Image (tube, rainbow, N blue to C red; front, side, top):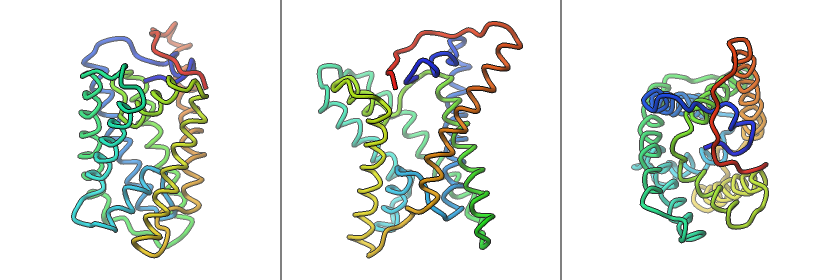
Length: 236
């Protein structure tokens, strides 16, 4: 799951059971953060903006369902980009994708009561949500298990092209934003969920993850050498 050397330094190579618990806990915390960011109402991440917009276009399906459908599409595109590297093991990525979809719908239900009117409170809630989202990602990176189909797709593009991973991820996120905007304009007459919070999300999540990396390494240094493993790396 690690994408660079910094991530490779913090992965857990210990008990598989412990890593799976960490991974699933990470998914839950991530989706809790996403739900808080949505309830803030000042803009959400590219992926969430697309799936959230779809819930307005066709309300019978939940956001978790749309998120799983997006992951399924990404798995199909992964095969089309590099079919020779695609194996049955790739379908295992649908398991965490399904868990994420269920947790997302659950957390959206649990946070339905949150309704804020004061703008500063909304921004504060977004910051808290992004902190939780980033911590969930941190735990998933630590667990170093199955890649989600979307991350798998970005990694496959990296393998096929050799372009910088960070540039590919940025281009992918921009594509999701444009798609969400076009769907909003085409079906709803306006762009939904893409606001200043979308930019804040992009900044805050990265900074929070850097903070968690720093704190983890600092704690590990105090407690002695950490047990890190070597994983597949994709240079930034």
